[in-house]
Image 1 (cartoon, rainbow, N blue to C red):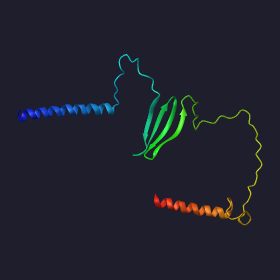
Image 2: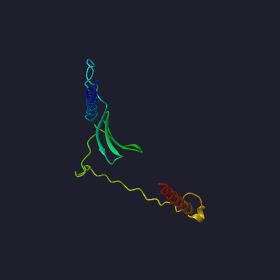
Image 3: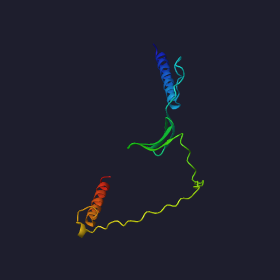
Image 4: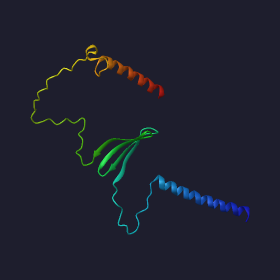
Length: 155
């Protein structure tokens, strides 16, 4: 074999591999799917569907997923995934903010409950370390400031 024949063979091989790589990229990019098998009776109904995806930043995105007539709003992040909201599709639609709220036909009068004063805790009377005493609350405040300083130092 001559050099020219080898170059032609490797050029043809590179062209075929390039076409295969381009076809694979197109299938993944445009989500191309083959039809179902012959005699399978049609495609089964899908229960799960990604309705919409919104990128918040490079690491986080919001995903609206529909499953069995229920929509879930999911926040996907490296720290973990969080379901923010669930809504049923057959539930009545929410009213617009600008539209007036429906008024009740007959207003009902409700008697307010009598106000009861909370007991006042005194450190001298109730002891220094019982919950609710002023000494206990000041110790709790000192512990909270200490803990928040430790957390800020390690963050």
